[in-house]
Amino acid sequence: MNDVILKLTDVSKSFDLGGGRALEAISRVNLEVRRNEICVILGPSGCGKSTVLRMIAGLETPTSGSLVLEGRSIEGPGRDRGMVFQAYTSFDWLSVRRNVEFGMRINGVPSAERRDRADHFIKLVGLAKFADVYPTQLSGGMRQRVAIARTLANDPELLLMDEPFGALDAETRWHMQELLVEIAETANTTIVMVTHDIEEAIFLADKIVFMSRHPGRVKTEIVPVFKNGKRIAEKEKVIELDGYSEMERQIMRLMREEGTKD
Image (cartoon, rainbow, N blue to C red; front, side, top):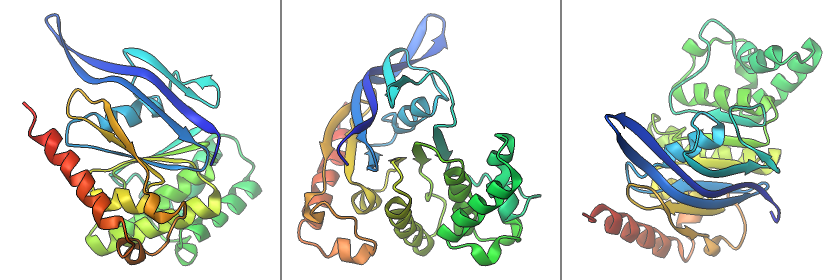
């Protein structure tokens, strides 16, 4: 992980409230994401985490500053980025396989290639036995697996995730977190993820970008050096490592500091 794939430079975003008033959501955000990195954006509620992610996705336009992916300016949505939301986005009237094939079909991928790629990613997320099942017959965690498989099947350069496990129960959530680590290792995927969960951030991240209270700025970047540059697939092993508790306390102090500002 040594080359920069995504660069944000002095990115600011204001929303027009009408009557000559504006709300500054984020201010002069600078960050870099390297190839095959898991970058987690963390911060207090309302700091603009999701706004940053939506601008990377091309769903929002910055008021000022630049966003560049692989040397190309981000001007809107594109096939080079795939987004997984918190809400379930599967089509209930399509089977798991047809859901995963959907984007490829829209993009004109031949049917044989579509099926092969769909089956590959369905297997990767552990749903091979459920390829012909419909989403309404699946649990919430399994439906999110469908969304991840569908996004990866479109071969994005960047996987964007906005609180993707927020609606899941605790057990399903940590299973999904472990699956994401496995996917990142297996598919060599570059991931930018937004979460409000400190434990999730520390477990998943190669790098944590901590944002300040509104208007959001990058307050600090935190690298979990206690992992020794490795991704560890079992969550309890990460929690047991020397250095985990100190990092958790560090981030909690940052959260408390930002939460008590006027």
